[in-house]
Image (cartoon, rainbow, N blue to C red; front, side):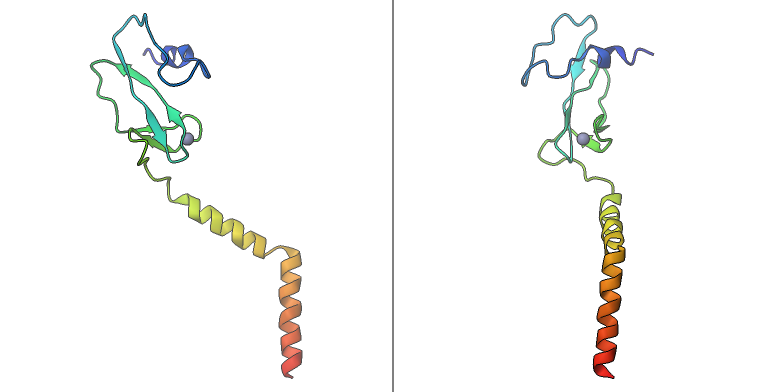
Length: 111
Ligand SMILES: [Zn+2]
């Protein structure tokens, strides 16, 4: 149960890529992960541990992979959210009235 110390010890904005991490008491390996939104996280694992292929991005929660070029796909709820927002927009009162007025106008035009 030694989780937490590694996270607390990492400083945000300490520097550009590849800051030197020296003086670590235990041998550790630092693995870079990238999520679909381009966030990089670099959790460290014990040297003899087997780092997972996918790591949850601590910033947005998306799955992050070790290959920056091909991050794992975001969960499928993204298109659904977009669609829902689209439907909600379409259902705003203003649009509803406009659509209704248009429909009535067509009906009256035909009649
Ligand atoms: Zn992210």
